[in-house]
Length: 132
Image 1 (tube, one colour):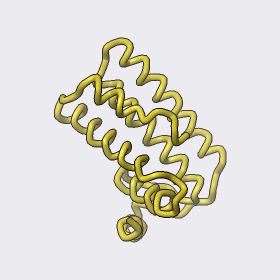
Image 2 (image 1 turned 135 degrees about the vertical axis):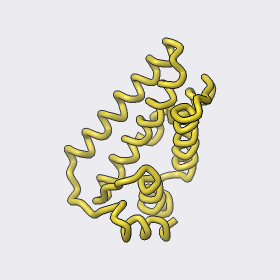
Image 3 (image 1 turned 180 degrees about the vertical axis):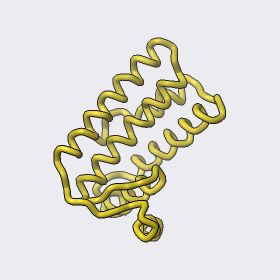
Image 4 (image 1 turned 30 degrees about the vertical axis):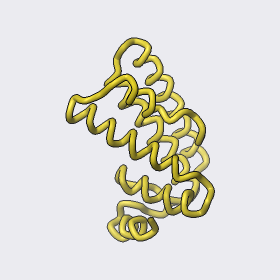
């Protein structure tokens, strides 16, 4: 929703930056490492950490997209609005990317703050490499 993106810009929660391809690559490496860690954690039966690591795999992949668009976010929700405005609304990514991220965000918060989690949620929170 462009309105929320603009609110984030006005509040300084999203700022314009020069496109830095090394920064984009760094975020993609972080995403790959977090995904690998999530897979390992789940194999070891550590469901809570698998959810958290799966969420951060998505977070870093989306952050790479926002960086490549010439912006930097300063909040997790503003990251979502930036991806929506820059990529989903423009038809460059399907809306399911944001649905997956929203699910992972809620699931991570539940695991972190409410100690509520399941193996099924961990597997869904991984957001299989389809967007990156």
